[in-house]
Image (cartoon, rainbow, N blue to C red; front, side, top):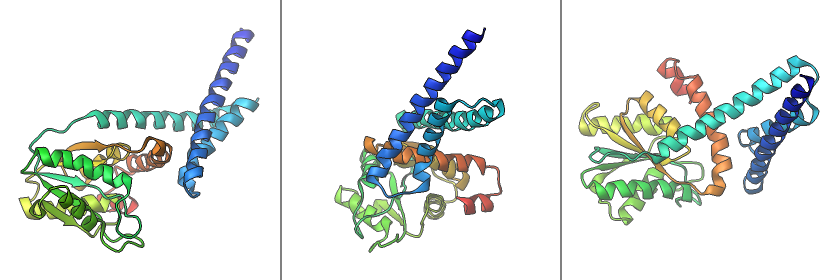
Length: 263
């Protein structure tokens, strides 16, 4: 019996050290390419905790229980998020929706579209070219150090790719995802009549599950369409999105005004 318990203990410790090492490695990659941000380093902190637990396996059961609860909760919810992202990423929206809502992701060098946002716009273009009657709602206001609104830059990009200006609606006031969706709904209500339309929500795969939750809370109905990201950026985006999605789920049942303010 003692031998079995010892073998189980060794196995658990090896698993903790292995998974913890992966989290720490991912965090090192984040630090290599991006400035320090506590939200981006949570995975590294949890990974270091896993390695520490695996190496020094505390004798006191209550300490082990606390550490294992933290680790299992984090890793379990992270794995669940990855599954949800995959399910959303492989889904293909039906034709015939009234509008495509493209969520903003910020501009660089004043008025330039970064790659992560270009992926969103290129994905929206696939749907817009296949559905000539569908409008495009591009979202985003004037960001930090930007010289034009994000919506303006996105609309210009779509026009350069063959989408007429008559099909483009600019939502140029928002500064967050929840505002993207709230202000987009106001514009769509004005154009089609209140709730008399359906949308395709376009954003990157890691962002789509939370965006769809926020869209539902804002009163928008429709489907999602996932844009890709650079694979080497996955540790950064997935780590941050895990915390953001967890926060959205945790605050879901609060009154809308409180929920909106907390997002």
